[in-house]
Amino acid sequence: MILRSARSPFVIIPLLLTLGISALLFLRLPFNGTNVLGHGPEKPRLRPHPIYKEERKDIPPPLPEYFPAAAKAKSPADLPPVPSWNRPPKEHVPEKTRLYIGFTRYWPLLQQVIVAYITGGWPPEDIYVVENTGTFDANRHGRLTSQNPFYMDYHRLTKVFGVNIITMPSLQTFAQLQNFYLSEAINNELDFYFWGHMDVVPQSWEDREPYKSLYMRAVETVREAQKPDYKEKPWAIQFFSYDWFAAVNTKSFVEVGGWDTFVSYYGTDCDMHSRIAMQGLKTPIADAGKVFDVGKSLDDLEILYRRRPKEKASRDIESGVNNTETSSAYGGSAEEDTRGSENWKKLQETLQAMADEKVADSFRNSWQKRQKGGQ
Image (cartoon, rainbow, N blue to C red):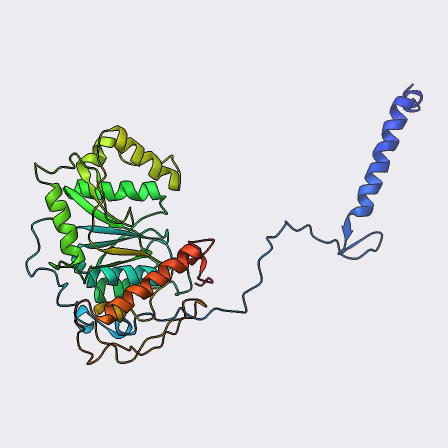
């Protein structure tokens, strides 16, 4: 009875299938490192591995030095003196005059704007560079090289120029950065504050009488705006040269509600200024000096200290060739120039040529991609 049931197709067929599958599996199993069919060792199955870029062989050289005197300096005392006609008052003005300058990339332009404000009379201790690089404390510890877009010379800014640095914990958008300025003003009880772009060169009107420095003209503008009989009340922002350089009324910006961080980049300007207008606030046009919008650095920033040059500095505007050398053409025993001199006029012409060059560039902010990469 049992043998008869074993010959049943319902038993034999599954049994044969089982034996066949077992035989196939046996043939694929390794035996002393070799499978039965003798095809050599079984290749291990590897997980997919990321494909890395080849290491760069054309390592770019460090950026040129655009301020040789500052490179050698250890403190502000080692720099040329601020022009005598632009020196800030010995006693600070009664007003709090904080100036915020945001930085994300391209150190030469940041250095240039800082030197321009200092030589225009702005007290260094009132200048705040807001480091918006997203690199945490890398710059403070000197971990980036000059070809890294986010590099800046932390030591030179704080120890040689004497300005302040606030490092943001993460990369901020334009609107977020503006709200940070406003938050700083609220927390420090500032009735107003100044802010400016990093790719500009502000200049005092040396040919106007009665003479006042860029700094003192800016201070007197907001001082006048705080008076009860100010004709442009209520005001929200003073445009010295649109927002390349501007003064903000803290109370007015709080009333409007600050910047909308969900409106991206250039659109956020339109949104904020529209809400300012709808709130019935004014945006007067002010004048503290000429502000040049540029995309390059002067060959030697010591020219901004208004010393008589030892030799004529050259710059090829059309070709963009920078003739910077390690030695300064202005420092050492060079004496102070006279206010509104021919040298000053030539400097204004050079800055205007640099501004025209930037406007002529189809991608006007091409300076943001000038660095070639680095550690």
